[in-house]
Length: 77
Image 1 (tube, rainbow, N blue to C red):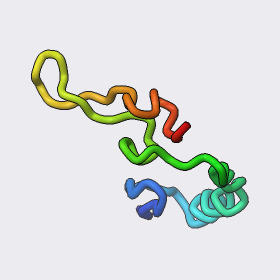
Image 2: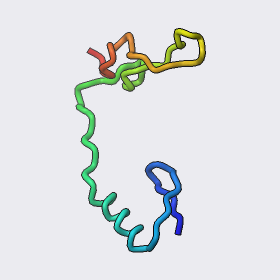
Image 3: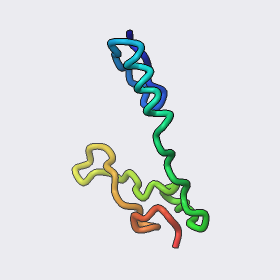
Image 4: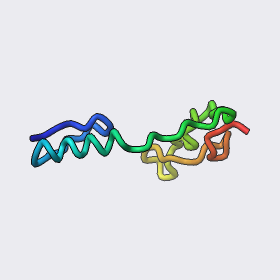
């Protein structure tokens, strides 16, 4: 059986329905991610990502670099 995982979108092969159910059970019992702090507004330049894509030094595409506005923190000070 082949199933598509909702969280990643990758195709994963399972040998049995029990293996698939155990995988889903682990996802359901997993601890949810904590919410972001309420008093920390995200940076408007990088949208809270703490990095932006800037031109590469060799001129071949874009590379991630720290946000110059929030200094790589992702929040406004």
